[in-house]
Length: 157
Image 1 (cartoon, rainbow, N blue to C red):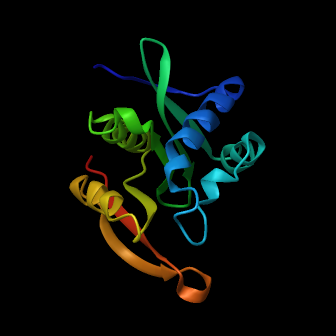
Image 2: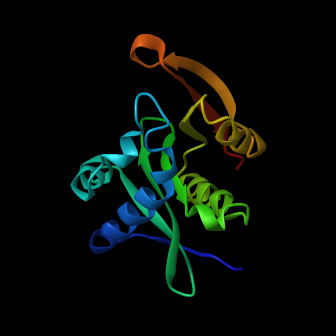
Image 3: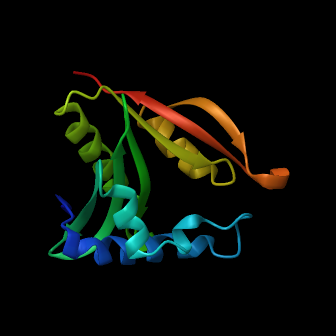
């Protein structure tokens, strides 16, 4: 299966939103606090990425199967909401999404990527470690019901 990754245009952000919601649905009722992805709207995505970011879509035969957001910060790119439809996980689509954003950032002179991942989803922590992300900070949610890591990767030239 060959996935095509493309930048999402403003009129395609509803597709990014739809894929994200489908991908994060499995966490509904399981995470405390709940994932913000499940309450995010298309307008929220627009606000988040409008000034210094963007979104991408992974497609197979024109069918959306994955998405992610990114925002350029002062000296790194923040990667968020990496989402792959559950039935298509394990095919390297998540890795392609992350690598696409990393390459996009590298081509703009950015040499670091960061992301956040919940400790209560250890498979996601392991996924990013395999992509050479290292833990740089640990944070607690209110009432310490869960924790999250900030992870970073140095992007080679």
